[in-house]
Amino acid sequence: MADPLLFIENLSAGWGEGLVLEGISLRVEEGQALALLGRNGAGKTTLINTLMGIARQRGGAIRLAGTVLDRLAPERRATLGLGWVPQERAVFRSLTVAENLTAVARPGRWDEKAVYALFPRLAERRRNLGSQLSGGEQQMLAIGRALMLNPRLLLLDEPLEGLAPVIVQGLLFAIQRLVRDEGMAAILIEQHATQILPITDQAVILDRGRIVAKGASSQMLAEPALLERHLGLSLH
Ligand SMILES: Nc1ncnc2c1ncn2[C@@H]1O[C@H](COP(=O)(O)OP(=O)(O)OP(=O)(O)O)[C@@H](O)[C@H]1O
Image 1 (cartoon, helix red, strand yellow):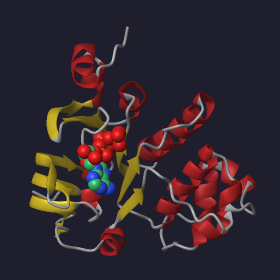
Image 2 (image 1 turned 135 degrees about the vertical axis):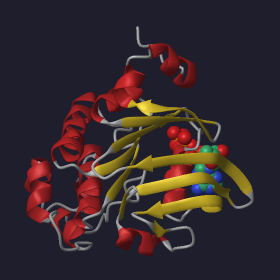
Image 3 (image 1 turned 120 degrees about the horizontal axis):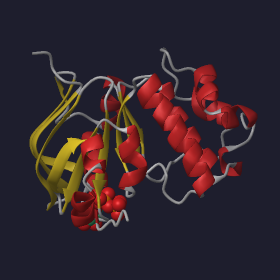
């Protein structure tokens, strides 16, 4: 059988000597979007940071399209196809929007024009500096910049955090276009399960560093008791 796009088996990882994640196994196929859910401190960011080679992998295996990532530097993982949008967005504040995008460009389907088509707001702001953007615009730019790398798998760490509801709706719509219409494979971290489950294919819930539930996103949406138990959500 062909390798999945992302294959994680029995992964344990943490920071320094501390272990945060244990026994994590999951896979993401080409064109699939995975929701990574869990309460504060469950280990979601640690998992993404382990994929990027920033948190420390202690055991298990990570493969991207068959290539073992385990000991590779973050830059190498980006070159192999991981497009990471960290929680803090980290746009270049002293560069314009256009410069932020072209600074990291690699050839492929995603170029400046394609990013502006996905986020028309960025086209209007293309001559503005990173420091002049609103939180929502910065998030669009951070996603656009990751796309300019023409990644195989996009890793979005809480892209909706701290944004006004109207901005959240716009971003969700763009992310939906990306994963549904463009078939971009992605892992999306989100605190609010009900926002992200409708636009993803499968979901994983982490609790205290372990996977406590896994399945089709549609199935999870249909099980409010499960979400309530693991996420403390009330959907009524
Ligand atoms: N950069 C870091 N250095 C050291 N420890 C960290 C770091 N980032 C996270 N941790 C620790 O890892 C554990 C899991 O946190 P993590 O941020 O992965 O959870 P999370 O599910 O992403 O939560 P949140 O939604 O609050 O970001 C916590 O105990 C946290 O203190």
